[in-house]
Image (cartoon, rainbow, N blue to C red; front, top):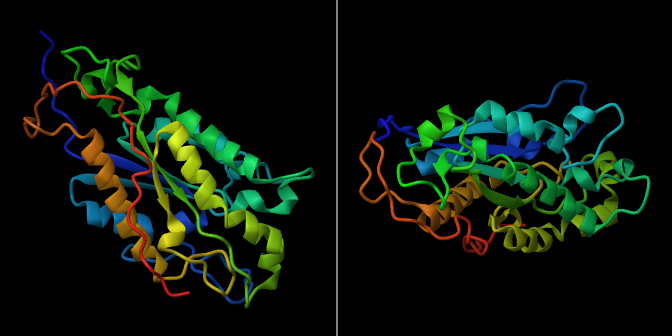
Length: 291
């Protein structure tokens, strides 16, 4: 009989994104000073964590300029795929990973050749595959676990054949807007073409979430870019998106949770579940926002 090992008291959720996950405050004018950040009571990952409650540990991994798989000259450190693998290993064990990227992918300077929606979709697909290929970074046992499986035991002995990868919530960024304060930003993101591409994020990411069996949320239903630079979220957008993300995680928990009969700190044996990610979007209801 395997010795019982105390389980983690909190679930761990990693938010992996760009400057809008970091919480960048938009500016009306370019500045040589470093970007400023919304406070912890405002930015959406913190709001999400607060809404989820004290049983969750938030890990913020937002980086300005981050792409999915596309390389900017001299800025390879901004490639999401190159950093995601070590990031997952650093923060494991993880129950959830929230992905919101794609806005920086549409910059014309990153694409010497033709670029369109298929490349956007494949960039995000690659990040999902990286997560799925690392079950040892998960915090929960999979449906094929043995009857004696204990998640912390599996973590200690790196039993990736028993653990399942973290569950994934895919968030589609909202479209960029024509900047009224900084026209150079509008040009940097491809102007009308960038607006058209980013306007399709919700559709193509929803398709991808269904193909890859991830949770899904369309940030355009809750957040919008500020007119100052046309890219970074308004202050009011962050709390709305954070609350919606928390609702989406709760819906995923209902689909995948197995709390029944578990003690607070001891290992329990839940009933065997079906496919661990059968969410068909896990999308929360649309809320109107002022444009």
